[in-house]
Length: 130
Image (tube, rainbow, N blue to C red; front, side, top):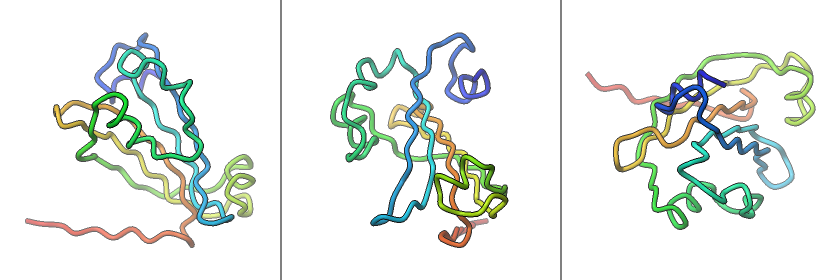
């Protein structure tokens, strides 16, 4: 995952933590998200109970890292067999793919998130300024 390391400003050999989550609204899956973090910056994170709580709250509370903004790329893709099963949609179903580089208050990248969202369950709103 050298591309992820580069987005986080890390050497390609730096160890990464990967947190994969199926996000639910009630009982309905609404997103599959994979968050990558520098293992060195967040020792012990993989041993914490991440199933129910907010990952970003844990980063702030346990590690003193507050995420304040993100650079995002959004495009369209389709569900492969694994994503289709996880999101309970047919194979080939349209998905939004959102890549985020999340920055801390120190202005440095702290997390890289790759998310897949069924397009019929999400609306992306954008406000642009000139």
